[in-house]
Image 1: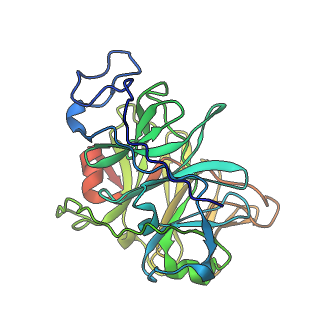
Image 2: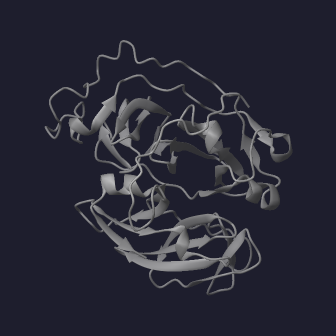
Length: 331
């Protein structure tokens, strides 16, 4: 597998509306639907990362046990993306088990997301655009010339404006957990390594200065300003779940201090899931007795093969949540 780097430079793209142009909301897909006063940067995309080089856990060098990374799995393949390797690109495109997806990481807001690289029948290829909204990465689909803001998970310019990328299940944890529990994972490797070079805007608050908080966007809120939030202090050494009804769906928010993760899944309101202890990466079972792993896949029992969907949710710095949302419900 290859890591393909392309200097996108942004030169000669006359179709863009620059941030200092008149705003938005005029019905044109060539205008921003967010206040241009919130946009910084320029049309100078980061290197394009596609079909990245992967190595075995045993081959990887340069990671400390507490280094954070993103794990994805949609069937049998498990892939890991260390944040320090993603940081020089901020967006990486890949494929696993027949599903094309993009991993995005903003080092400033410390937000991470996995989205499907499809919009209907159209393929998507993502790159960090060079623009930011309130210091959060604005992602660009180079195939359609559409832009979406990561923390809103909404297209804000281009043909897909006001649509939302489909979020996919992902788990963020650390390198020690991967070495111990996912030794067969394939790991994104890059010669370009970055530690977080951009400071976050520290603010003291209920969650603590610069603490990363897990948030679930409230799909039933038409204003788009509400989010349910939970921090790692709500979890302990066990696998623990919080239930939240959002619109017509029940959202299960699983987490653990021991395995250092928080993740969420959507189910029907009538469905019942309970935590499973001491079998990680198995974390839950349903009423029929089928056990599910941390990726939301049933690995045994009568519902083996069943896959739970991911709500629009992710980890980000608490100050960043406050920049984008105004109404918070603590789980």
